[in-house]
Figure (cartoon, rainbow, N blue to C red):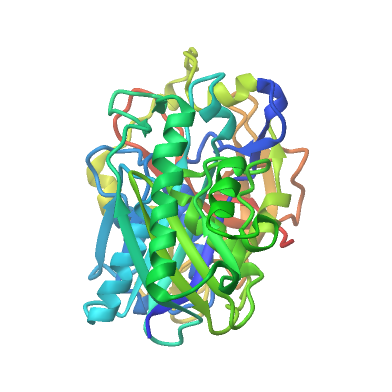
Length: 465
C-alpha cells in the first residue's frame, strides 16, 4: 500500500490588507527575504518532524515561480533539509498542477520499488500586475507530503489525468507578471472543463458518487468558480469542499493542492475519503483514504499559521519587497557584497544544512564548526550535528540603525550558541528569552547579482491554532 506518511505546510507571516487595493479580505505575501525556495524548505521541515530523514530517497519540487530558469532547486531544498546526497531530485515547473503530477510520479516510483520514500513539495509566490485580479487573488505558501509504502496513514487508492491545451494563464521568461485571457473564457473552458472532466471520469470509473466523498480538495482560482464546479458534480460546497482560504491566503498556485490538503489532514478522521485535484492546462485527480490521523509531532496547523500573522503597513511595502519599484541602493560598501560559488560550495554543510559541531569529549556544541573545543580544548574531536530543527531563546539582540537588520545571539535548546540575523520581528516584538526557531531565508544583497544567497535566520516561534 502506497500513500502519505507525513505532511507539512508553510504560510508566510506577512499579509496585505486588500483594502489597500480596493478589495476585501487579505492575502499572504512573502517577506523581503523569502521566495518559493525558502517556503519549500519550511514546509519540508514541517513534514519531517518526527520522521527519520535518512530513509528519504527523493525530493520533487513543484513551482511556477522558481528563482532560477536554469538551476535545480530541489537539490538545494534537499541539502537545506539535510537529506542524503544519494537521492533522486527533480523540479516540476511551468504548471500549477505540477504538485499533483509530481505526487502521481512519486507514488508510481514507490510502488515500482525504485524508492522507499519521496518528499513532494510545492511552493509558489503569485505575482499579478498592480491593480489586476491576479494581484488581488494571488497568495504565497507551500505544502509538502512524504510518500512511502510503510506505516501509511493516508493511502492513495487511484488517480486519473486529463490534458487541455488552452491559453488561459501564462508567463514568459521575460514577464514580471502573470498574463491571462478574459476570465470567463479562462474559467469556463480551462478550469471548469478540465476539473469537471477529470473528477467526473474518476468517479465514474471507480463507481463512487459525490455523497461517498468526505472532502474534495480542489485547486482554487477563486471561491465562486470552485463552488460552481463542485456543485455541477453533485457536491455540497459547504460540507464537502475544503475551504480555499481566498479571503485570508489567496491562490497559492502550484502549492494550492498540497497546502489545502494539509488543512484537510489537520482535521481528518479515520475512514475519510478524499479527492485531491490540481489544475493547469489539464487536471490530475487523486483519490485517497485516511487509515489513521497523522500525528502533529510539533507541526503547526494551517489554521494556526493563518492566525499567526503580521500585516504590512502600506502598499508601497509590498511593491518594495517584491522589487516592483526602482529604489536607490544604500551607499554602504559592506552592503555591496557578492556571492561566490567556490566558498559557497565549500561551506554548503554549514550554510545550507546548518551543521554545527559537537565535542566528543565534553558534548559542547559550537557554530560555526570549530577544530578546537572552546570548553575543554580538545582538538579535532568533533562530530557533525544538525541545528536547523532546534528551538532556542534570545540571549541578546540588536537592530542595525542603518539597515534595520535584526541580529541576535541565540541559545539553542540542547546546547550551542548562534550569532545570526533575525527576521519577521523588530526590537518592539522581541525581548530577552523570546523563544525562536531557525528559518531558511535569503540574504538580501545587491539586486543586480545573478546568484541568490541563502542562510539560516532566527524567527519568533509560531503558536499552533
